[in-house]
Image (cartoon, rainbow over all chains, first blue to last red; front, side, top):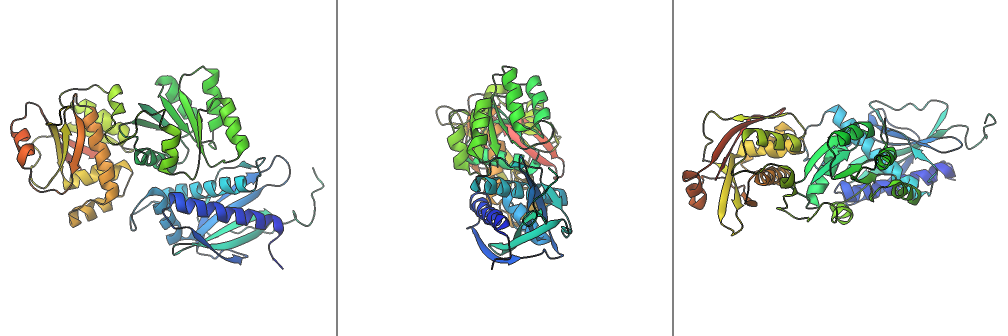
Length: 166
Length: 284
């Protein structure tokens, strides 16, 4: 049985599809290869998250993470830079934020969820700790030899207990 | 042709500029704004011909910017470049007055299709920027400074050089007149050309050293340097950039003849923040 609930799975699949399109069109890669599901990020991963806010109900967040070298290489690919070209952390944050923005926009479109609005991407410089109120669902994705984790953060109560306070 | 790129991501503004060049829209006079409010202010001061705006931005977002411009009966053509890909948002943008809608991720072909009729003739050598620049036999220091400052996303200073640039180991840009004859020449050493090429898309200065050490510019620096020489061409009357010879070596043949018999000559030192200073000479 799938450990990831159906709603999160739907978003994850759409995010992988969006990342694949991004990789081919703007990162000069041959596409991405989907890997194993994961229940947590490792301590060396950094990246960015972006909120998807519906007109009603609970928002979710989509995230894109890799290790420091991975996010730098993704940023270089986005900017059309050569391997080894230096980037500041601000530039990496800007690029990774733009990557998750594009992935989320495409995931939203692929899901037909036009009522969701995108928030502003937020760079996460260190390990992501969702806490007890958010449920983490992730899957590994490989672009060339860069290992990436795409993830969905949804309210931990959403799939089991409808909110009564609205 | 003046284009304003509006996006809160500096990286994305740079990518849009690069994609415009890749799509063949060269010689554009491109400026940038970091959000809708900044864009509105810039447009009111000096309206561009075309605005390319992101949707999802702080302060004033892209759709609000489109609506504000329409309320003001602005003649500016505005298009939305966004990761928001739903048909509803596309319809919302068009209903608000957007002339086109480009979805991220995009390619140069996407830009070509959306903008071909708006930004004039695509293709290398197009010099639409010339319509907004004063043309002369060779550019003056002030005109060159203004043109480079518009092109490069860093502070640029151009000053008259104290001595003439070397004619050894140079990169040479040939400008031809309407008859195809050599009308003007711009030349710079490899290091200076690498700096101009790197600064355009903020390729780190370390890459300039690597390129100079290897004696050859990578393709991205060549593409960018081509654009710099193209803009220099747009400042000169009656000539267009024909080719840039990156192979270096000492100037010779008709280029040497043009330099030695030049009626007009400008030698400048160019300083771009974050890059080593460079020299550039233009003769006619």
